[in-house]
Length: 153
Image (tube, rainbow, N blue to C red; front, side, top):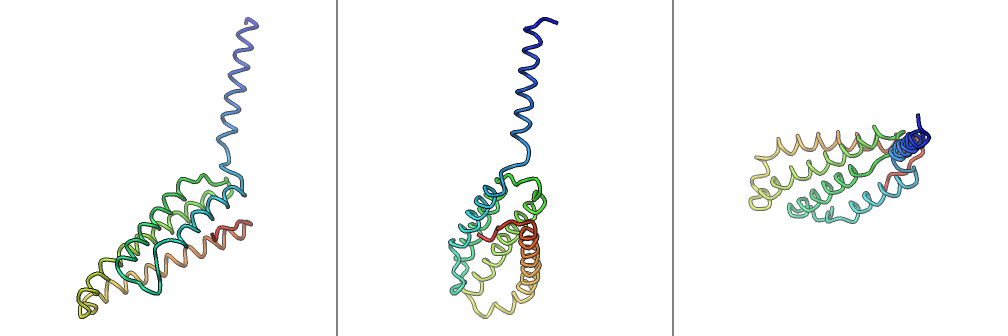
């Protein structure tokens, strides 16, 4: 084997190792927390006004939360929290979907308050799903905390 061929092979091996190392493990814990907290803060500062839960507000909040889920999904987590990160993304996405499910029901009720009785079963179903989603998110946040992460925003 010629010297130049060995040098080329060594250079390629070093480059391949560097690329593999660069792709491993996601971001640092500190950077991950910063990125997640930035997204979660954007949700807190979003369009939902809980003192005035009108259909239009819920539609806007649903869009904000769906965007937050997409933004979270774009973050590469450290290896030790990949599964928790996926649970967080899924929970936030479910929350956005649920708010989106409530909005048309509230629109109907805002137009015709007497229609509230017609939507009672749907609202009960959504409430149950909301409670499950909230419990899932709380469990996920606690699991992050157990690992020493701050993801509250």
